[in-house]
Length: 135
Length: 115
Image (cartoon, rainbow over all chains, first blue to last red):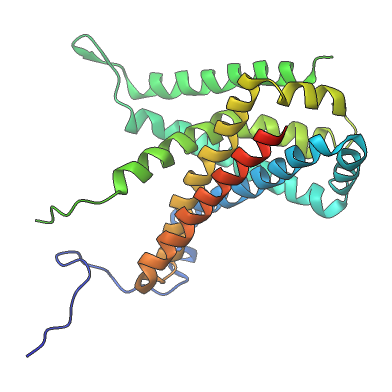
């Protein structure tokens, strides 16, 4: 007698409908967080195309920037920015849970780790903004 | 117990690094390049962009900024599809997601090489 092969024995996979994440706000937020990575990746592809246009000369570069002025692209970037901020906030909130920091015998309170992560984000953002916008 | 060796920890490390890079750096780049420049709030000249991107340290930064979050995407996208019920296609989905990230890494190297 042949027994059907189970891919990962010992693991239980509940059967759920494809719309399970619409059932409550927590599931929905989880799905939004997962979806944020798609928008971030799309933006980085757009950025890569911009870098690709760079050595082709000022004309090609300006034409590309002109494309990004279209309302559709502006809407995309507004959405992408909202998702990117959502990713940052959820990511730094998690650092307190994931990253346990010890100072000697004592554990640094998770809230302090989260606070430090947000502070680091602020400092990096300001430095980057200054670097991009000067001169 | 399952003691099968997998490449999971390797991909997970790239996922974590990519998530961190995306959280720290992507919002400002999105704000400046996606909105501030196209809407005319500020402008960055072609000459300045080119001079910046030609520097080796900046290239290294751009490589990390673009390539690492692709693995973060791959990891999450893979589980989005699995969570939506495509569990029967585990292996092809994983290959497709991580494969796309690897392809994106190669494309990033190629683009930066030519600047």
